[in-house]
Image (cartoon, rainbow, N blue to C red; front, side):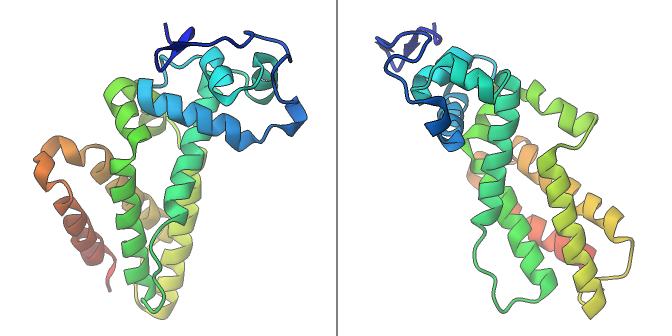
Length: 211
């Protein structure tokens, strides 16, 4: 079982307690999130246990539970961090107009998310993890993305680069288009032609946003 074995090697570390572990206040949260991301990108969220994460991060279970109450809270934090990183790694867009810059950034986000091993594994093994965010509520990542898009739309409207309209509703539409291309695009496209979706999304956004 995964809670007993990782990469085929049985752990010799104690299952709990502080012996052989780093002090709780010396543990960076990124160490825990890195361990959780590695496991979830390999075996999925549902099969990942708190014991697995503690063992991989080389922290005690007590330390882990002081930071995160369960795997679900860990998964939410991991996905938020990973998609924040993707957005931060968007290619430089100096010199581009607001509309063009936003489109380049969104297409990068969609392309990188579609190829990200964590999202691929979630779609393959744990699609139910995404259902609440697709059908019932917006998560922290989506709210942040909506705020950013709305801000860019408002700025573009002020300079005449983006058509008039309710920036909030337009931001919602743009984000829905983006996530549709990230999550369901590969279902309708030949695997060898998936990257062509980026060009189509770029064209779609350009036609939707320009005055």
